[in-house]
Image (cartoon, rainbow, N blue to C red; front, side, top):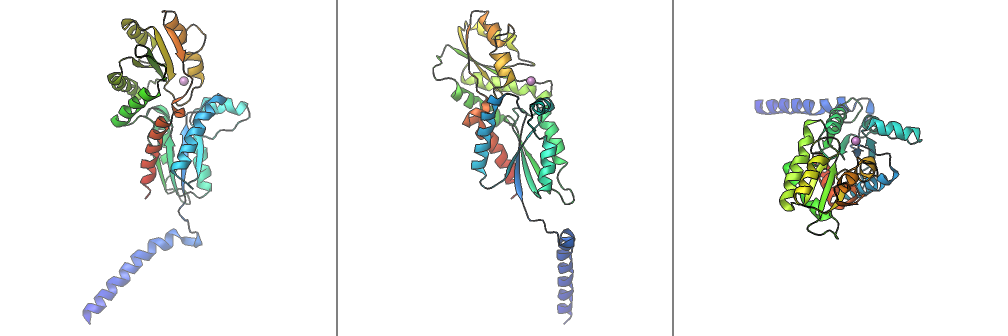
Length: 295
Ligand code: CO
């Protein structure tokens, strides 16, 4: 008799504890059904030609996540401002997340389409996380890593670089990839990438347009190896301003002009990394990891 009373009491307490938080969360009859979404965030580009790279990523993401709504945002304020003057409104990640909050998304996987975990990525991560756990808002926000994050990513990217070099390239020709470069500590990724790719093929180089290693270091290495011909390729998601002007442009300080002055013939390849499926797969895999944490 006493046991039954006791177990009945325990049952009642368990029932109360079990039901109480639910009734609070669903107060005023506002039930929030689970709604998962994806936010793709790129640096952005003012070049219309760059759109093919973004479209390519968008298609791959839709294929990997059928039925999941996908939104876009851009981290470069300069690009957002420039595009606005042309009449195109690009959303910042914060605007996009606020919009998704309004659309009653409960779980958002934000995928960084940046190349390295530098300033753009860390800023995005910080702000995106602030949209999680808000009252009547998004419950969870997870941010997927950029192209290069782990050592395995760097190794994988190096393998892809080898695969995407032009088919007509001869062994004695060099391939020089132009990365962006940053003053953020994550600039070391370019040196790590160069290390891995040179193990696979000593005639493939990685430099940066803004920082170290720059074209002067690369030029010295090319001369040391008596390289006569170079394929120039951007190591940026899109072949935008840097690729078209600083890498392949006619101005005297472009990489093409600098190397041609040394008697090295240059063949620029104006395709961003996001135009090659093997690179896109790395971003998509990072998104799968982030999205997978919602299950
Ligand atoms: Co730049």
